[in-house]
Image 1 (spheres, rainbow, N blue to C red):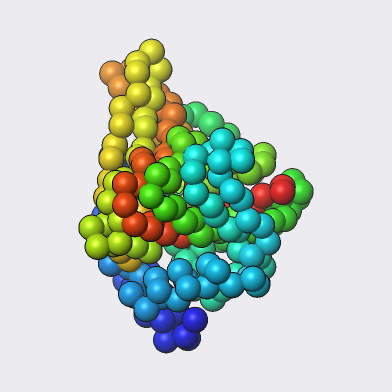
Image 2 (cartoon, rainbow, N blue to C red; image 1 turned 120 degrees about the horizontal axis):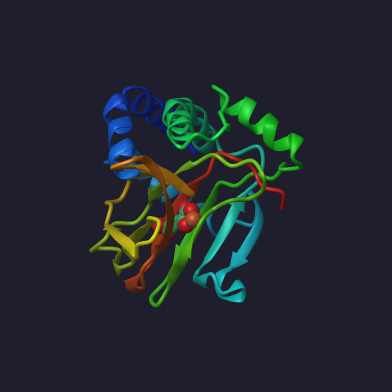
Length: 242
Ligand SMILES: O=C(O)CCC(=O)C(=O)O
Ligand SMILES: [Fe+2]
């Protein structure tokens, strides 16, 4: 990974429209930022998938009934681009996360820096890095889930799309479901482009009703890939017990 790619990425993250992103997150529970990863970085990350080093764990999804496909968790120290994403994105999401806790009358508040969040994770035996790269072929899919890895969890996470819908794969839409009390689930289906960053709700968010805010539970997954190969990079902020 070239230092210049990481610098380009850092600049893009610093200059992103964070007030606009916060508004999207409050309104919809997700925000899409087009064209954030340079093409060369997408290619480097995909090429590195086959490398034997750099990862702490490989998961074959069908073995756990998570879907069909596989993913690898990165090990510490993270590749510079991933460390940059975690450090630069997290502080902008803290005010949103804390406003959500307040709206729902929950006592949890999240610290201002990633390092402080990771310190809280370590105090709860969550030492393992959670950023991961996922690979799906034809027929691949990811069942609806929430990425909670221990007692400490941050309510927002990001995913970067490393493949181009159309040329690289068809199907494989990103699916978010929102379940509100006493109602069926609403599905949100997204087809981000290569290099796009999606920020979305990990577990629940406040939705305004007639009597104040109520808790909407959210899950995410991937619909079946019809053709080609689809890679994504998931950057979760809290660390894992295992
Ligand atoms: O492949 C995807 O789009 C979803 C990946 C995912 O579940 C995640 O990043 O947490
Ligand atoms: Fe996930």
